View: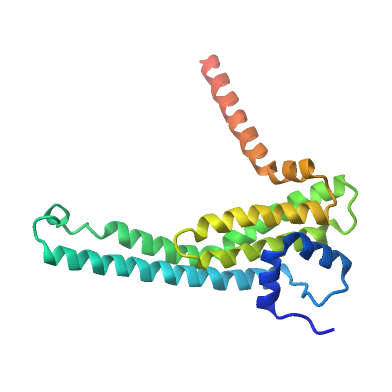
Length: 209
């Protein structure tokens, strides 16, 4: 059986998340089973495209600004200083750093979620929980296709990532909808717990004084 190409498989992951996991669990389809490394590499390409598009857009805005600035010396006199492009330079630098350090950040993100999913998978008596956790993350990274959408791409990517994670948890770990939502919200519970611990420590330190 001839497997689909990487790009078509990646697009299928995004458009049909629930059906994708059913096919991956079944194993008898032309859908390619991409590894986490392959998904990470492909998503990095879309992040690079997004970074290039952002830099081009920023340069376009600067060109418009300069055109308006030279056409009217009164309206933009207030901005006439050496720091007027500092914000633009900061955005360009942050974009470049986002692209460069994207793999490192995503590796940490993937390792964290695989750890969480393996814990819940073990608690739910799921077989091959480690492999299924990797497949959930591999499919979830297909949301980075949406980063190439101008302006709203970042928000759309994050929203789609949540849906893809939910679909993977529900299908791969065979959980109910409320349980899948609880697993998805687990990092929020962790942050709330850490915040409460910090606040409790702070209050106790005040009482000790």
